[in-house]
Length: 178
Image (cartoon, rainbow, N blue to C red; front, top):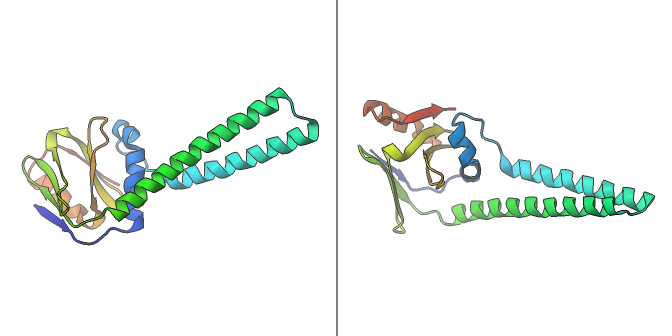
């Protein structure tokens, strides 16, 4: 079976793909777990950490700085920095995915799944290496069972076609429909 992708996916599609990649290891442990929006989560953490930082600085200004105050400020600043870097890296992956789109063909056969992109990049996954196939809101993901994080995604409009192919050909891969 061949699925041709000629149009660029929506931003929500790519955001979901990044969220899957970020949560890859936890999804391997619990494949049916709810997918969290890490973009929103990291942004909310930054806001909360910023509020705490301001409160601690104000408290220290009012009551006088001490070593515990300096430590608390330093720890919050470092955590904010790390959270900001994490969010920036997620956004960079999102922009790269969107910018590097090119038409592709996803092929499912008796051996596995093969993605051929027009720019010459090819990725193949054998069925025995795929931990599960999962339908999300915007995409269908093929996730490998090891910690490499290799995943292939198709637009959600192909979900029923993919599921039907797996059922009809008796492929021994867990299919999770959310």
